Length: 392
Image 1 (cartoon, helix red, strand yellow):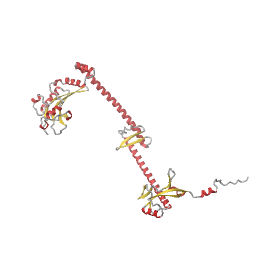
Image 2: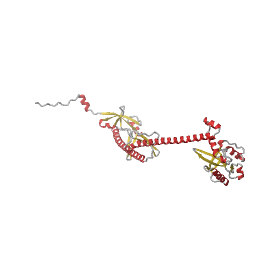
Image 3: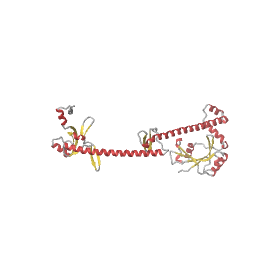
Image 4: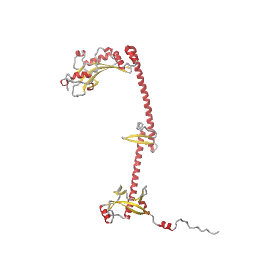
């Protein structure tokens, strides 16, 4: 058997192809830099344009192709901008091109680009490390916030936007933190479903509580309707019965009738009438500076509170009414009438004894005129109702 002589590898390159393959490859790129005033002078002396910002086209060998960037439009530029420089031990970034005092040569531009490229790598590495550090710190913070939320059963997510099993928003130190069960990691993924579970439980509780309150309110309403119907059928006048049947009888009229019946034992006593506008106007006209004053309802301010002490006559009236109405609450009321347009005007103080009793869901009340603190018992029996304070 004869030996087979292998053929040499075939190439499609001819003589011209061999020359092209051996020819060093280069790339044409634009270099941008700035000149100082001295550099601009040097540019003019060497026949240049003397501009502050220079753009030149240089040829970069393929061995230094890493010093060139190409944009989406295919424009090649030497990596001189943005510019990176050392500030102490930190690399800082500047968007301005480098500055030269003389017109740089191609080698100087490529040297500057190489230095800039190295600093850019350091800058990118530092930025990446800092970003990773922030991410780790943020992740650690989210884990801690998630642990705090899950450990406290009283914590709730914000109801707007409505929490779901996928995402929720939690208020932490006046800041809103969003948790997402799909994108979060670790224990933070447990926050949305737990927040949604708590939200749903609260919704059910609120719904149940609302239903119970409605039932209680409806029961009270039914009881009121029953009491009104019983009173109308037993004590109502023909007119009241007709209006009640037509649904036109005010409840206040029924309550007034109940009060007349409940406190009939004190019917001879003068009742406290809320006619503060007329009384305060008459009181102010007793003083010379206010002789012609005219009051409107909006000019009156009435402050009512429980009296802190009682005169002998007032106490006697309280004791008598408490004996007559042992099932009622009897208190001494103090009404202070003030003219809102003139805070320096004298005030009028009036006293009344409030008798109040609860009948079913109704609070039946009646207020009687109480003795003031400056008149005698004879004047009281004559219907005195007020004490006139001195001018301030």
